[in-house]
Image (tube, rainbow, N blue to C red; front, top):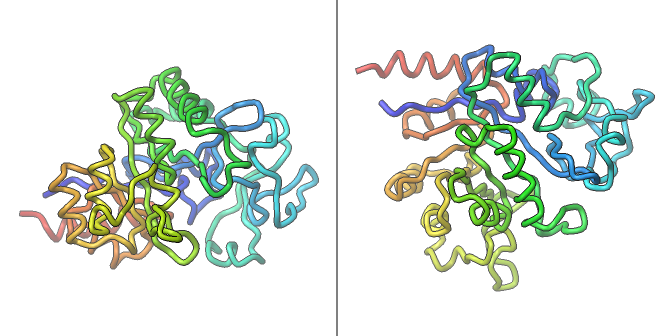
Length: 304
C-alpha cells in the first residue's frame, strides 16, 4: 500500500485562524505528517507567513480590533513592525469567507508570524520532523506587490539553510520562475510546481496565444496539455495541483515520471477516499481531523 502524507492547509484553516502559530501546530494533534503554508517578504525583507499579497479584510483587524477595509495594504509595503500592529486569530463570521469556515474557533489575538518563529515554535513542540510544504507567494500578474523572483528565492533558500530545515521542506510556487530560481541557487532542495485551472485563477492556459505567465516560459501546448509531462520537463520533484484538476490518468503519468503528487484543498471524505484509492502521495486539507479519521478508516478497510 502506498503511504500517503497527510498535511494541514495553512495549518488547520477549518478549525483555527489560518497561518497563526496555534493553527499551524493544530494538525499534529490528529497525527498529521506536515503542513502547507505561505511565505512572502515584508518591506524590510523579513520572511513572514501570510497567504494573500494584501492583508485580508475578513481575517485581519487593526490595532483597535476593527476589521480592516476590503482592500488592505500590501504585505510587501509594510515592515515587520508595522505588520505586527495587525491582529489575527478570528474570522469575520458575517463575511462570505466567515460563513464558509463558520466552525473556526476564536483564538486570543495573534500576530503575523515569521518562518523563523514557526520553526522555533515547532522545536518547542517537538515537531522538528514535520514536513514543511512552503508555498512562496508571488504573482507575475502583480509585480508591484512582489519582489523579483530571484530576490525572493535567495531569501527563502538562505533562511531554510539558516534554520536547518532543508531536509524536510518542499518549496513550491504557482509562479514557476520563483522555484526555477530556487533550483538554480540550491539544486538539493525539493521543489513543487503548483497548478490550478479554476474560474478564479488559471495558471496553465495560454492567453492571447501566448504561454501562461506562470510557467517560466513553458507552454502547455508543447506537452499536449498534459500537465505532469510539463512538470517533469521543468525538473520538479513534486506536482501540486488543485484537486478538482487531478485525474487518475494524470496521476499515473506523474508517477511514471517519478513525480510525487500532493493535492489541495481536499475537505470532503468521499474525495479523500477516492484520492487515497488512486495512490495520491499527499493530501492537503483544511480539516486535518477529518483527513486523519478518513485515512484510518480507509487504511483499515484496505489492509492486505
